[in-house]
Image 1 (spheres, helix red, strand yellow):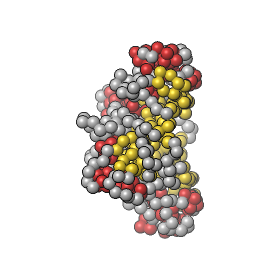
Image 2 (tube, chains in turn orange, yellow; image 1 turned 180 degrees about the vertical axis):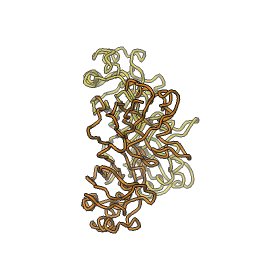
Image 3 (cartoon, chains in turn green, purple; image 1 turned 180 degrees about the horizontal axis):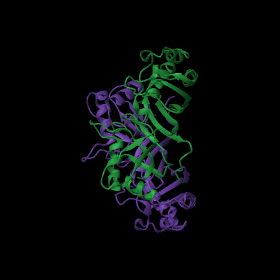
Image 4 (cartoon, chains in turn purple, cyan; image 1 turned 60 degrees about the horizontal axis):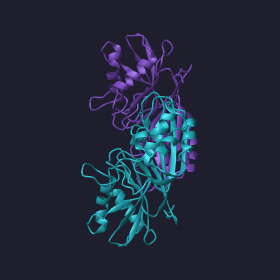
Length: 254
Length: 254
């Protein structure tokens, strides 16, 4: 069975998340149903690099699928895009990965962006795409606080109760916070993340940004390894899965 | 009756347009219903600088409303935003305009942006916010063609049949086309526009971008003053009403 790698973009708003669930429509279900005609009428399993939660968006999700036939990659892309209408999902590119490549386990680097709309008025144009924080945030203080979380740590304090990872040891490579007009944007990179790790870090940094906690507080929370100490889980709306990197890199074409 | 000026942002997707209609929900209706409690329980009339069509977005629409009471502008903004939930409309700022100011007739400059997603794959994340053109567009040719439309002309060739303006004489101040990654973005400015003028110009320029028509064709179409000669009306999705300018300028605060 030839394996295909898919580069995917979606608006997470109408979905229960990437993964199939009994109680609603998932991105995975839409794509698996769309892929059935390419697989002898049988829905294939499509596994992703990041199992995004309900409401989380993606501009560079990567997934894998094994199909019964050896098809031109353009045909796979066009067929998936035609059959996933009218859902807000688009397969940007399809390529043939190396042998034994896994969308999830071969990933060496993942990148997320979190957008906070920081103004009095609620979002109109970007409703569902940003977290609205009406109180003025000090982005410089948030950035300073974020630097204390970089590196190799036990991130238990920022882990969801439902997290299924064996341990909470992760290496955080980047956690930048910057003001961009009315928005405060958080850019975060690591080989892999725990469930809710990005949203819990953002919620904790926001407390610093509002002046409710000192700049060294997020690092203190990290050191406790106690989930009860961190700030709220920031809402899904603001989070976007930006990109995944593999070694060797996949060739997505032009 | 004190007059208030409103600076408004909205996602046009779920609306029949700015203006009240019998067959669906308009931005005007949501705001007028939201304003009733500020006006002794009676819905006031809210008039806008630009009567955007169904599906057209705004990040800087300006509207006017007369209310029975002299209220702090922050209170007007907060009340409208609270009561217009959950619709994707946000009042960004409220100010008290000069005497005899009209949102529509005092405007001296209007600015629109049109986004074309120019790639094979259909939109996922920005569905409803862009016009998808899968064929490669030559943005430089579109820009060159656009320059032939600048200045004072009779724009009858780019006017909707339903246009209610007395004449089609307008001065086009800017019509820039540029490639920004996967998008071709059109920026257009004038004191005022005819109904569908921007979308008809974009649809015509797209024919040049696809190589179906020469660079001097849009100007030839203009000179015929015949609507039957122009390209298709580009879809509403890609259009956003960016800003309105007044003389003297309104002070929207910080």
